[in-house]
Amino acid sequence: MTRTTITDHLLTSVQMARFVAHGSLRLDAVVPAELNAEALDVLPAGIPPVPYGTPVGQAYPEGSFVRRLIELPSVAGALRSLVGPDPNIDHHAVHVREPREGQAQPLHADAIIDVRPDAFDVQLMYYPAEVTLEMGGTLSVPGSHLRRTNESDTGRYQNLRGQSRLVCPAGTVVFLHHGLWHGGRRNDSDTPRYMFKIRFNPTVPQRLLWDTSDLTDPRVAAELDAHFPWYEQATGRLERYNRVLLWRALTGDADFDLEHWVTRVSNRPLEAAG
Ligand SMILES: O=C(O)CCC(=O)C(=O)O
Ligand SMILES: [Fe+2]
Image (cartoon, rainbow, N blue to C red; front, top):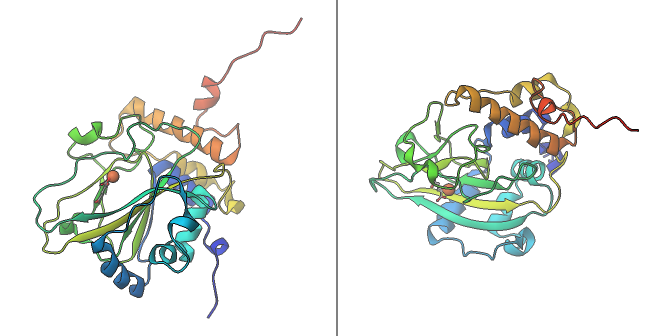
């Protein structure tokens, strides 16, 4: 058997650009069946909280269930690409959508206000069992993470064009930018839906942490320029503008742009000397 390591599973620049545009990355069925079975044993009892800012190694001892989950090469590779080595734990929680509970969670982001243009936290969401359309998969709105709203102010929106209601096989892991609008849907099935969420805080600058060998691939700019059907004409451009700022921060490339949006706005000619 060939052993694979984190470096074999780093994200590509095209995948990173897609994350910057969509605000999420989905890895289907990456957790093996034995670990999923173990999860369905341990998650119903909950995972005791850890204090804000606890390093991963302290929060989840070597060999523990959570540590083995986040050390799976594809999970570890994505995490390393997004937040770098040795992130801290912001918080974690087991989220259950109870069978036939009759209501959905309003659309929200998990921070009251967090508009950092040059850094982000990620939320790992792990689904140990298959989530069918009836089971209350997490709803999310692609491209909503850089829109400046406060926490649950989006709860008034019932449905947005292009929203995505998660339906996934067992062992799926989704990474969300902290600003992404999301919410647990109503579970109309007879089975509880479990999801384990961990929010990670980076402890290093999030610069070029992924496999950058395709940095100049034209698909990077194409991903960053993605349009989503719920965007307004003008504000939709502002989303792209904010993605350029984030891509500049992630790459250190102060000249990167789409359609000169940011370049134009940064123009501050200095007075001629003397
Ligand atoms: O249960 C879910 O699918 C989402 C839960 C969630 O977003 C939350 O409680 O903050
Ligand atoms: Fe949430």
